[in-house]
Length: 260
Image (tube, rainbow, N blue to C red; front, side, top):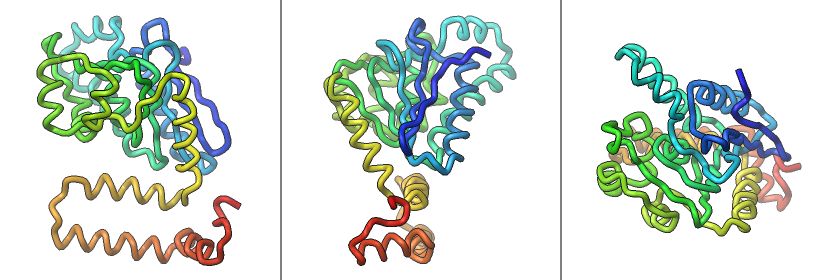
């Protein structure tokens, strides 16, 4: 299998780079498998505190590879289920990765590429990037990516952009909450570095627990059960070794052990 992505590390931060610039980093079954494996491996690596998802070339990700789509055109329903299942597994692996993730969007993101961005915890886009959920133009729907894209942009914006397949720019992506920051090309890496530094300075177990907290609590009804779970969550983290060390370091005006 040809390597379709590159992985590198700098200190406690790892970067996974989509490396198919000749096809605008469109994904196929091989890239899906490699992305799934990379995020699982880095998610389990105790030396890694955060992961940046980047891309080479002028586009971040153009969605599905045309040759892959040609093969899918002749798939049976069972083959389509298996194929879509692998894409869904990749997106969920990124979304549930125990390490915080940042999408470094240096160019356009279309269709499934928008799912990749939305599956990351934080998204920073260059100000010239464009976005499009183009599936309905092909008689399709953005089903597999929808749990992540709708969480990122909200249902109201999803109604519009799922249905119209309009292309929108980085300023609009920021306005609707799909990305967190927009930067000029020359400032993109500095903004990503600023965020990775913040993520790498926090308690690794606390970061993992915070990711689960957001995923568990978001848009849930505030019931007695949910309140009880949040009470247990803070009690457990306070009693943990990392929680005790963090508080003691703060009170003692020193760096915590994970930064020593």
